[in-house]
Image (cartoon, rainbow, N blue to C red):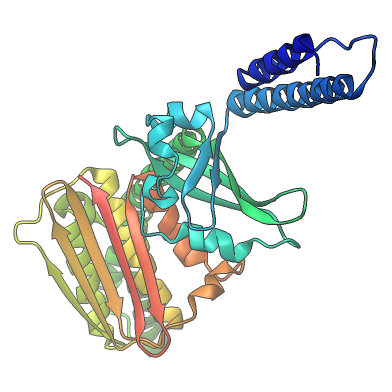
Length: 385
């Protein structure tokens, strides 16, 4: 082997070890075995350069994606993240890589990763779910998670790709729309209740008063007297029903006395029916709240009771209304027949819960709903003050 060729091979290997794959060795005119070795090393350099360019190209695309992208291994540890994830979550890449994926979630006990693993397979390699992330500074990021399994060129599973679209602004807009709709409904219900009470209610009461004056006239006719009595009874029932409609639309006691007194009044009416027994307990000196929040809490309790009346066959309901330092929470628990929560996945089976969920989301609340066959159903709701 010639000295110059030995130097050529040595220089080539040093260049490649430094990442300079564009360097090429010179082939002599002899075209002997040494030249063949140099040619082989040149070809290796071309392969390494091509591979490195592809990797850099992929990395550039990976980091330019605006969605948060995480690669997670089978144990749930993050093995790669893109730049968007680093910026949005406010952690360094070094901190994120090798950390537990579920520790980034607002609720780290949600078992989301186990759910992702159970939903994905080679046949059905796509799963989409909404969840919330928590940044280093404590901000909540609403994310639309698109999850898939990753396989190498041999078809061997190597991890999970989780792409997260930030839908925080969309959720805030949805919440604003929901709040506006509910506020409009509340205002309209109050207006209708006031109009019915002040117009139709007054007219019915006046008609009943005028009818009662007819009895002052001495008319000796039993059929006439019976007809007057029947009209008086019909008017009385109509006035009573009108008051009930006004109460359902917007209880006057809720407007004037607050949610505690309104629930207490509702419970008192329902206990007289003797269909079931309701126990209501609240914090002593329960405060007045923002008017719309009082209406929302009352409507949720009303919705739960309506569902219980229609479906549960319960004989007892416990209602607890509690004031905390910064939140209002309430729990409703009945002893009915319960049901399988999977039924709520069916369209048409979850209207009552959907109404409750809409109100909770609109006013920044949280809720948990649980039911067990043969043991009853429980609802927990919390709102910030």
